[in-house]
Image (cartoon, rainbow, N blue to C red; front, side, top):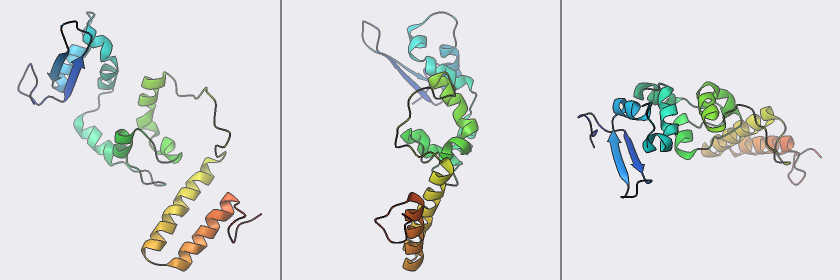
Length: 173
């Protein structure tokens, strides 16, 4: 689909549902989306799409976004592309690994970088332990895939020991 104002491909599709005569639909290229979203005069489109305008001000081009989507967490293996599609991170280490990329997003959404709410009582206290468990689980899956069951059981016992699970052999009590 092409932009309503030029022949460039439309990358922003905005549907405004506040008009009494029905929805107003805009198909815009990045350049025209910037001008529509950044006008100083009040507009119903501006109120609905304020978040889009903030995102455009970050200045991420298509090439920068493509490069960012390739970035992968070394602990859990989630890519930034997977995060953008699911809206969920894979492990606590993702906050460290994607910190520079998540910071503008978190400020935009929460107006803060600091957590001020409650935390689950069952939450793991040590981020390093969680990262180690994720890494060990990946190693165990790889050992099973290559049919090295002795190594997989050794890693399983190591995981149980870290978790302090007394139901399994090799776990510390």
